[in-house]
Length: 162
Image 1 (tube, helix red, strand yellow):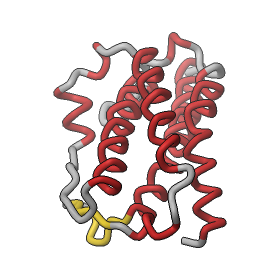
Image 2 (cartoon, one colour; image 1 turned 180 degrees about the vertical axis):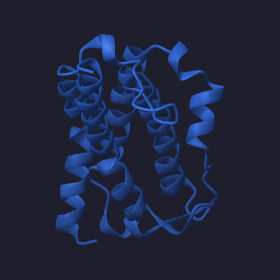
Image 3 (tube, helix red, strand yellow; image 1 turned 45 degrees about the vertical axis):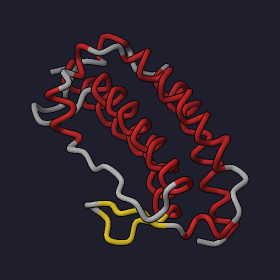
């Protein structure tokens, strides 16, 4: 990744929480627990997932910086959603947690020297997990889930007119 690409991705990473909060305004709260299919996530579940994912990202970033070359934890996001009963958790708290954790991580990564981004960690699902790869994943993670929420909204509206 070039320094210019990295700068762009760091900016996208920083912007994620504000984009999420803006996107949530377009979805009626009454549809947040609606699921487009039994095996698909509701907006509520997506928000809890985003908080879980962000806290994992927070720990992984710190591992890259403080203990490069060491293992990072993988997790089964669907098992977490089910076994942690995402619908019993508060989505507003999840968004607040995500916002704070991302703010803290951004404060650390925004001015790192270029050589740090080549550091690696051992990830069971990625053979070459560099800090650049971490940034690639998390700079677009929220954006991808906003798209998922928009699709849920379209499906919910269609379901209501049947």
